Image (cartoon, rainbow, N blue to C red; front, side, top):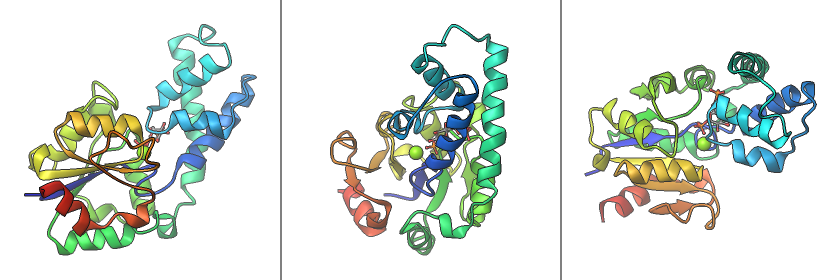
Length: 219
Ligand code: B16
Ligand code: MG
C-alpha cells in the first residue's frame, strides 16, 4: 500500500534550472568558458561540484584548477544562485503542485524531498510549503549522488516507510534510475524518450494526478 511520496525538487516542485543556469553562465564567463541552455540540460539533478566539473571539461579546463580552487568557484556560483532564489515566491510552484500537495495531505500520505540541492530547505521555505514535508534529505549526508539509490532510501526512511510503500517523482534520468534501484515506484516528468525507464510518466507536472499514480503503483 502506498503511504508516502518522495519528491525531487528542481523540475518537480519548482523550476530552479533557469537560476542555476544564469549563475553557472556568469561564473563560466569569468573563467573564459561559454555555456548555453542546451549544455545546461546536462546539469539537471547533478550536484554542484559535479556540475562545475562538467563545465570545466566543456571548456577544456578540467586540469586547470586544484580541488580548493574548484570549491571556491562552486561557492561563487552558489552566492549568485542564492540572490536568485531570494526572489522565489509561492507563485513559483510548478503547475499542479499545490493541488498534488493538498491531495496528498487529504489522502494522509507522508511527504519528503530527495533533492541534490543544498539549498532545498531555503527554497521550500520561499515557496511556503516546507511544513507540508515530514523531512528533507540532507545531501551532505550522502556518500553518492543520483543515480545511486541512497537519496531515495533516505527519503523513505525519513517517513518511517519502506521504499515499496512510496512513490518517487523525478524529472531527471539519473533520478529515475535512483528511484528504480531503491525499489520504489517511479513517476517521471518529461518526454517519453527521456522518461523511458520510469514505471509511469507524464509530460508535465500538471498531469501528476495522485489517484492515478497510486492506482498504477498498487496494480
Ligand atoms: P545546489 P534536484 C539539483 O536539484 C539541480 O537540478 C542541479 O542543477 C543542482 O546542481 C543540484 O540540485 C545542486 O544544487 O547547488 O543548490 O546544492 O533536481 O536534485 O532537486
Ligand atoms: Mg530535478
